[in-house]
Length: 77
Image (cartoon, rainbow, N blue to C red):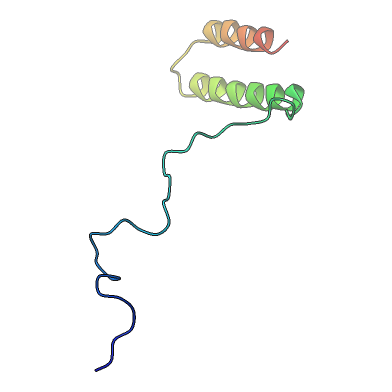
């Protein structure tokens, strides 16, 4: 049988030819942002849906719902 390459080329204890860095830090460009209005409205909508579900399930009272709803709306202004 004929072999190719040098002895040890396929030694599993050697370091790989390509070094992959798994723990890379991801950075974002601060100049590219999404409009806050869309994010704020989406977040507000989600919060209000969750509050409504809590009220419908009887986990919070109508007064608590109104207080938390007003707080959520005020925080998005």
